[in-house]
Length: 541
Image 1 (cartoon, rainbow, N blue to C red):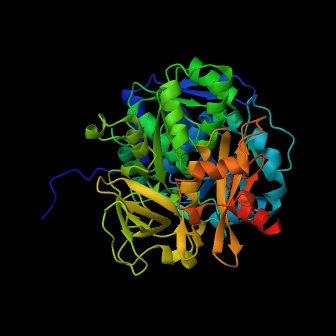
Image 2 (image 1 turned 135 degrees about the horizontal axis):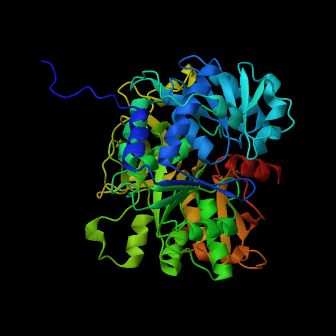
Image 3 (image 1 turned 180 degrees about the vertical axis):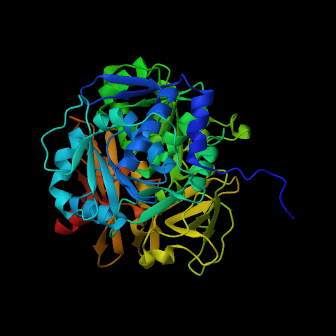
């Protein structure tokens, strides 16, 4: 029997059309490298996307070709988020913090045809250019319209091409199952793996992210995504914010605490998103300078586990609610958000923060289950931990051109996340650890994440990362790398161990010799603790 509903294509085109028609005067504010601000509207964005579509097709790119970006967060990057997929191409955002050999692998594996690069990043990519076999054209995005001296060739300046382009709308037909975007994982183990998003998956992810109990944003909000646009589609914000009509604020390359505070206050930001590193630095700055953040009331924090102490500090000291988000590049990327249910609103504050410190409940369109080593599904009882599997319409079913990693996808359509987790009776997800980061001591498991969060609640501690060291008796023992507050002489190793006593079983506690103070914890390209580097340091010590 034929259906009675319209066969309406779920494409990115529909998102930008809505922004132009319903929210034409809402603004996009970008901080440029000079510190100056650029401001235009969603109506202006649409008009420039029309021109950029003509630019892309004039460059000779073919339907399905990958169009790469090597750029910070700003309005031109946003234009590419729309112009590439709406013109039948695939937007490939390159992580500017990848090691050179990883970047070389990613560009060649994706077979990028054109690369758009910020003028400030030209020198960073020039040494690789001759190794990038498929790139046919380089486009430099400048602030002043002048091409910098460069060995990139052939090369053009972004605005010069835009001025020459037609302003007549002429987008080619695209289907909802056509590829729209390509992101690679950060490659903490082996080469990065590509995730190819469709128009349909991106559209559906935009709808799920906009749910009240997911991110809870509206047209009334002023949103600052500090999460990079080169990482996991900036958590979907470049599509969500125009779709709901929220004002967008891009901080650009300067994300120091001082710069963020000024921008938040001047643009009256109500909602911000970023990794824990950003907000931990901001918290220390706010405390030292006795200032506040104006109208900012919510922050979504993800990318790695959010310390309970940070959630508590922002809520009590500054009246800001941290919403913990969990997800993966393979999930487009949102999977869970940590919000309180109505019946929890009368709970004691400490108990509420316990809830907020977890990954949260599954987003609309995301199914989850936890399985034991034999694949048997475990109950949602708050204690049965196993490997977390997920599935849904915005979750990858395979990696791009990567048969070797197909074991991460089950035959019955689930994605193996690699996270050890459990679900409680209230449907809240608790991430115990990554499988590779669990510490097995005396035949029992120790969660490095749980220990890190506990140490970060110790007075005088800014950050902590826990890895394992080999031990002839126990197999593995925990080693904690701890960063003190600047200028502080405490805590001592004994203070840290004492702080952990009572929170962990005696056999789980690290020795004082295994509490190691360092000035800075190494990080991956997306701001997570780089435990691979810490393990190397530990083995060398």
